[in-house]
Length: 196
Image (tube, rainbow, N blue to C red; front, side, top):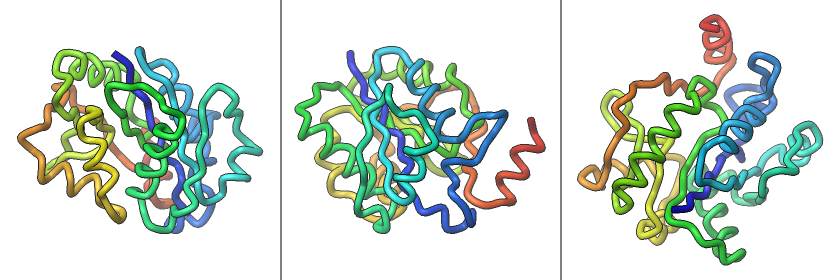
């Protein structure tokens, strides 16, 4: 079984007011943390999708160990990064059983949770493995290869979330509960730093 981790890190960080991907938590930027964690997930390779601020991020972060693609359509929202990543994999003729979507701005998620998702997927390869929020499913999520066509059709910033809502019967979730906080604003960042 082979998974490709797609780290979605193309956003403009408009609510943050500066480059969110380069915010530091315990000495590491959000994107470095996501890359390092993704490389420890078994049975995976990593593709990082950049967009806004790509040049600045590449200047400050060592990305030599991961594949990188640039989403020129990042203004169209998160869905465009998923599509950009998949098209890059298709162009490379990359073989995989599923795509593991991760956000660069969820630093509270630990490696053990990702490993649990992979273990669940290796038992149920036809199911989507998604994270359970209070009243919905979301990322991190693993999509089997059979759902790639559906992912290429999603639109906007909430495309993947809406797709998950429509396909609840196809979803399994890890039993472990985890802090799924997104760092989107200076307030989120401050609040999270205060929990460390």
